[in-house]
Length: 374
Image (cartoon, one colour):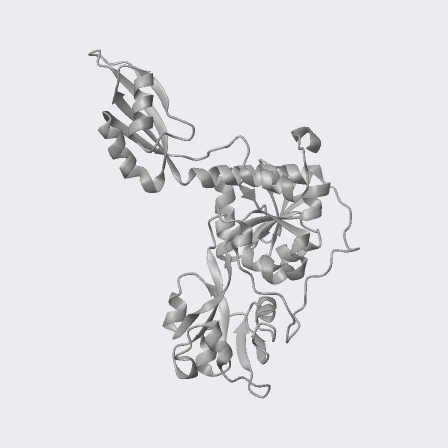
């Protein structure tokens, strides 16, 4: 998995225009005993989040579609709050929400210098994948501009600054600083239709999320080298103090993490069972180890097959990465396999998820017991 540190966020530095930061959590937290999970309330991010939770048997019930409060029957101790993604982040920072699912772009944009108040529990939920990138027109003064370095060499002045339009003003301000080679830049704000601004002459370039790049190309815009500020996708996040100081919140975080991890890992695997000609289970196991590259998670599971004619067969089951399915089928056939059955897998639970161990290390928790949350 790609570690969170691998994401390259915009350099921090002075800003030309000040965006309103998230309010400080200091002195604002009101002690409570309930556990709150914040989810995005609208859009594709909301739909994907709800689907992923449902796939993990964490169906969220919303008694009234006009309400912002829901619940999960499998985790009745948790209140589910539907909020705008920006507000999920803000309320995690101020500890009004304990755990949330949002895009990594929202974390960097809204939390900013208060990112240390949060902890990313799972950084690859496999939805909402995109990146935040700079894009310039393919025409006019920018026709030959293909990199950030070339952008810096253009003549910008206080009277005629570089105009960047974006919905990510905080990240833009961290990037377009004098220290980073942009002494004359103005950050303009907009909520939508950014791609039209350069053609209309209201901005020189845009900073926006990019998935496929199709919208950029259709509006005569291009990404430039060095202009990818960060990678983003859905993340499971928590308030650092909430999980560090409240065992019951940490227990909820652990269960959600384990459910997500087990399902996401299973999505990449198939369970493959083949009847293989062999005089013994040991002979079959050795053939799988020696002559195939797919021996399962720890090793193959092998059982006897009872045939009417007395032929010697055993049934071997292995886990196979989905992208390697057909090569694995050919390998099993080559060692005498037939009647091969392929099944999708719903969950693969490890003894302990690696991300859980990393979370405990991040929180400086040396030992954890399920009884701690009782």
